[in-house]
Length: 89
Image 1: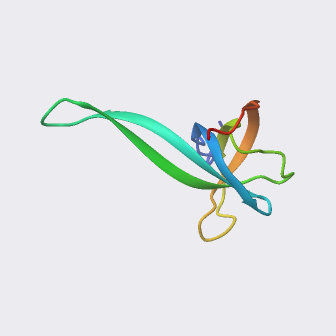
Image 2: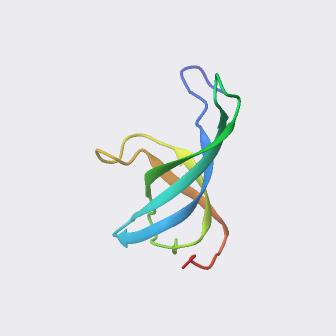
């Protein structure tokens, strides 16, 4: 990496909404262990993600890359669509 350049985080998630123009909502699921009870907990984070070409559909599995702030809520962008999916009903 060049000097001054940071490593950008990459997350994977599923598209849950594509009703906005050039924006999709992606649910990222992660597991954590409770510090006292040691139970495995599922946590879901919903992110607004920039989709320049409006190519993502509900149910798609996508790779996200951290980027500069695009708006108040958007600072992730779709790097690629990994799996075209069917929406869950």
